[in-house]
Each structure stands twice: as structure tokens, then as C-alpha cells.
Amino acid sequence: RLPAAAPRDDKSLRMAEDQGNPGRPPQGKTICFDCSKREAYTPTAGLKTWRRKLQNSYKLTANKESLTLERLRECQLLIVAAPREKFSKAEFDALKAYVAEGGSLLIALGEGGEAALGTNVNYLTEEFGISCNRDAVLRSVYHKYPHPKEVHVQEGVLNSTLEKSAGGSAASPGSLAFVFPYGASLTVQKPAFPVLSSGPLALPLNRPVCALWTGKARAGSSPGRMCVLGSSLMLHDDWIDKDDNAKVVDVLMRWLTHADGLEMDPFDADDTDLGEYHQVPDTEALAGRVRGCLEDSEEGAQDFTTL
Image (cartoon, rainbow, N blue to C red; front, side, top):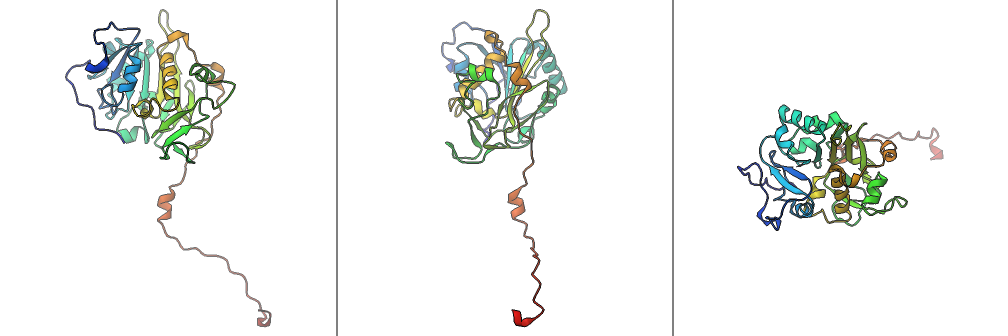
């Protein structure tokens, strides 16, 4: 389901001409979309609706060159949406230094994890306690969306701050719903913590699909932050306005940019109700293997007259 790669550009920073009011002075903080790894979705291909929402509050740029610490320091948040090439060690080192200095990073992947995309971003995220699994989240029963991988999640918000900030009610679980299309589950370990799960009606059951990490603040700077999202299509033009996706993404962006002093509930971060990760057999492959079936037969009667 990944579209063709967006056309490459020789300029390192470029935005679409149809941003609206290109002469308007930039507002707020700077967000940079990375386009150096043949990302499936960019501000000019697949993320136009989201870009229009963001440009009202942030200055937006796009990076087409290799990532360096000097370039990263020009923005407060770097967004990587479905990269389809591998990062170099030097780029990983720059990203780790960037986060350590107080920068924020949003990484969104898709079903099949990094292997399906052909990237190696787990090498970075695993150091922060998050990795994207090589699986797909499926809805076990039909509801609202026709395809099983277009998962409508009703009770998947794990953090009360996220629920309240997005307009839901922390006292009423399930008041906030989102659609998780063609995504993968995550494995999360401390110090990272999950904020969205697959819910009780999807497989794998109650597993993380979005996780956050926050570092320690240094003198004169905010703490570095990271968000890993298992479905980059949640940000796509076709899905950003479905259910409460836009509200959920907006809260995540405010948290990543340290807006309004937003902090996730620390008690929810330490006490999340998640299910165990179980491997499901490949029933399609097993069904194609014909095997003989032997059953125990009943003993025959010794006296044939009793038959």
C-alpha cells in the first residue's frame, strides 16, 4: 500500500508552493520532515492535510540531505514517516546527540515493521526501549471499516492525560476512538512507556501501537523526547481526519514540542494494562498441508451374536 517515492529535489529544504500565504512569517517552533530516506509519505505526497494543520502553529521545513547534528539543531522536532532506506551510523550518532541535547523525534512505520520498509530504524529506537515488530495489527470482528487491517480502536488510549487533552473523558474509557490502518505493534520497555494500544478487539490483543520516551532535562534546555508510531498511515491524508486521529496526533505533537507544559500522566506510564505477546500460527500455510488422521477404533464384540 505504499505509494511511489516522492520526486527527489536538489535543495536540502523545500516545501510545496501551495502552503498558503508563503510570505507569512513563521510561527512557533520549527518542525523538519526528513525526506532523505525515500520516505513513503512527505509534506508534498501523502501528508498535505496534516501539513496544512501544522503550518498554522509551526514553521515547517524538509530535509533532503544526510542527517547531521548541525542540520538537526535547526529544528525542534524531526519527523520520519515510513523511511525506505537505511540510516548510517553517523546519522544514528547525530540523532542520539540531537535527542540528548533536547530535540524531539517522531518515527512512524507500518505493517511488517522495518523489514517490510527496508530500513534499520529499530537500531536507534531499541536504545530507548522501543522496537517495531514484524507483524500486522488485525481487527478480529468487522466494525466500521471493511478491511481487517483498518483497525477501529475504541478502548486503546492508555494515558489519561492524552485522553483528556484530546477531548475524551478519563473517567469513561473508550470515549476516544482512533483508526489504526495497516500498522504494526510495538515492544516497549522502560524507560519508554506506551500511550496507545491495539485494544481488546484486535490481534495482537492489547499490545502497544504508540510509545513515548522522555529524557532528563539539562540546564537551560528541555528534555529530549521520542515518539514511535506503528502506523504511518494514521498521518496520511486518507486517515488523519478519520475518527479521533487528528485529536490524538495533535496531542502527541504538543507533547513533542513541549507546548503548554503538557506532560503525560506518570502513574499511567508506570501502570499500563497490556496483554502478553503471543505468536499466532500461519493457518493459511497449515491448511495447505494435508495430513492423514488416525482415530482409535472401538473394540469389537467377542460374541458376534451381540452385534
